[in-house]
Length: 466
Ligand code: HEC
Ligand code: HEC
Image (cartoon, rainbow, N blue to C red; front, side):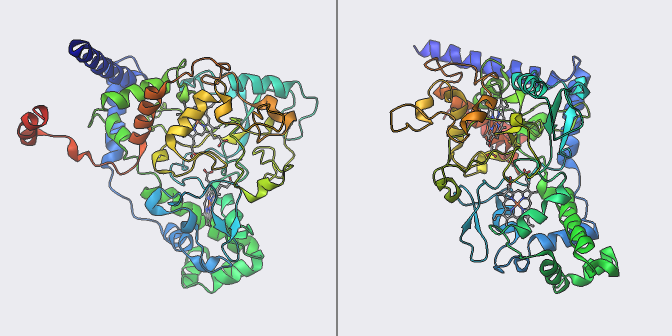
């Protein structure tokens, strides 16, 4: 028995080392490619902080200014807490805002980390995919294209009949085309910062302690009209998020691992293998986890949209109306006419810093990371654990989508390709290991436990005779 355990441990450790080498070499067949990846990761870890430009400094003042809300008590940082990877530190599914901070939103607040490389929202010709990016094949994309092609009219774009894939943009539905378009959303949303109109918001900026800086950066015309003044303020907010290292430090344990400065534990490595394996988690099909051709570190999203059919969140006020559905890419928050094939699709988020989130997915229905992973492998195999029963006893699967759009749900990509009653693609231990791997994506890792030099020989025996 002991021996079997020992053997298993050696096998796992061996597989770990093998996989570490494989993973690092994945972008190229030679050792030099491996070291180039390491080199790039190390350079990111060692890069000195660059001081913020005046525009970004201004953006920081705006970001933390609660006077810019109707309540006078809510800033961007109220929901995007800098101490929690710019996501809420509380466990509310959606945050409360509005004039009295009692209005409930309909979506979970995403992290603001690792948005800096998000492409602008676009419908991209599928043929334009760069093969060098080595994107794994994704069944849902092929299905979506087939779907789109069967439609006679395609109001969203001029590429009728062509294989197009929606990609990028800000918010869960990509409705803000670029970062600088996004800020007006929360500032004017009656459920968030709740400013009554643009003119009043501009007046608040004109009366802010940093009004002089606004003039210094954007010129004396800045307060003349909301059209220019607010656009300038949004630009400053975007610059702050683009420039300040705290939004994209690339210093998680995973980054130290890419730089060759730390090993993953056997469990974390096992989690990574399952994350990659197209027959197990298959997570990397959407949450890309390899450095790209420019050796930029992975941000764990392909910026595409999918319908995962999260269970309806019955705690949300908006959902008391049985006819209300948040269908992401086809509205209601997006106002452009969506295609039927867009309904129920949401943007794939980064998984960096996901382990410090308190709620998961667009409607905040899932409250633990383990459950988030479990949902993937059980949605099809054990739907009774996720969806409620109707009065007649039948299971209301995909209950957060109107019946006519349930065909958009991804049932082709693993791990969604198993059927009811089959074994889930990951067992409980495997789910735990994937979670342990996801925990390596949390920023500000300190490799203190890594014994080096003198310390190693001193710590060595104590550690092994434990
Ligand atoms: C009341 C809470 C709240 C406040 C205040 C708030 N946000 Fe957000 N933020 C959210 C929510 C919820 C979303 C997702 C919105 C959606 O998908 O429709 C979001 C999305 C974003 C995104 C897009 C992230 C992504 O992954 O696409 C950015 C950027 C952002 N907010 C920046 C800001 C800035 C800048 C401010 C201040 C001007 C701000 N937020 C104020 C809750 C808030
Ligand atoms: C087919 C593409 C696809 C695959 C495969 C996939 N994901 Fe996702 N993931 C998404 C999308 C899209 C969302 C957002 C869905 C929503 O909220 O409606 C998401 C959201 C998440 C979230 C919630 C993040 C947050 O900020 O709330 C976690 C955690 C997650 N995925 C982990 C995984 C893991 C682990 C796997 C593998 C078992 C996996 N994903 C496989 C597309 C995918």
